Image (cartoon, rainbow, N blue to C red; front, side, top):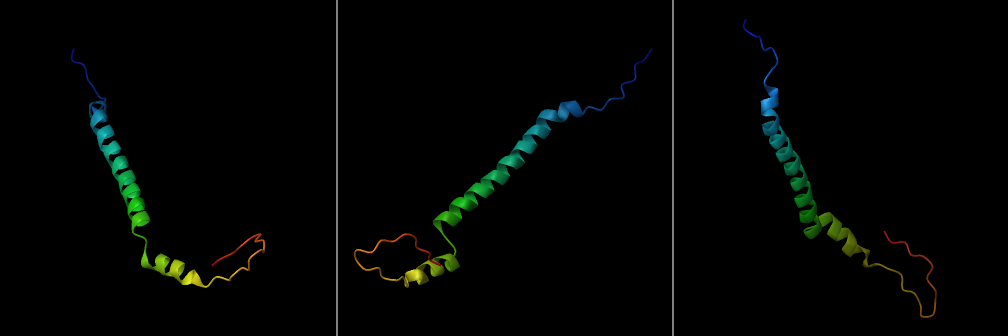
Length: 72
């Protein structure tokens, strides 16, 4: 008698599919990490301009205690 095998051979592809999945996960995280490092080193011009325009700070006299400062 001849045996019928009806199960699929997806188990043989499991290491290959695992490697493909891990490749895409590593690709996603590497893009995220590299873009975060790039934008930390090279900030956008709008962020730099707003920080440079905040030079209008109030002068505090000598001997005064500062409890809290708020800058925008």
